[in-house]
Length: 110
Length: 111
Image 1: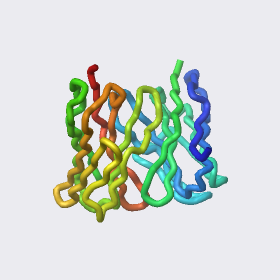
Image 2: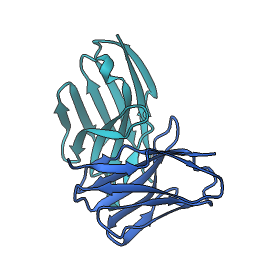
Image 3: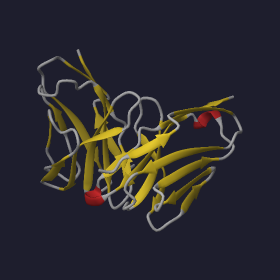
């Protein structure tokens, strides 16, 4: 089955730690995205990548980093510089004009 | 910057009712408008995609319309069912493959 997988489903982080969220797609899509969703709010764009080895900052990139070494993979690192990282993180991909989403990772800071 | 607004934020209706969800956007220069459904704690599921050259799209009991000139899209749900209870989000696509999301309408269909 083609789709987008995200792992882990739940992630707990201690203050001061960096954590990495995984996103993999087998849809052969060129573009990939990371969004953050807070309760009762819409999605805010963190980073996006239109091709391998290239990515751009979104609206809330501070405290986050990404890499795009393979077409299928777009991991997101939440660094200790992100002061309020507790949120639901969604990865998406698109080819052309339709977006498809993974199941999400819920990150909680302890 | 594109701003997308969804009204109402929440809606509760009895089963069987027809309903309309609204989505408005400030910049009419969009490539398409996509409607999604999100269940609690889950990712987004694509419902309908309307290209900028189209006026509407239909899938089963769902019908979405697009009026670029007025910056509006509506999602019509016919004969609502309890299983339709979820949050519905709209998103517009702009330049550089960027998508802009509304904050969603939380729908509760009561049996």
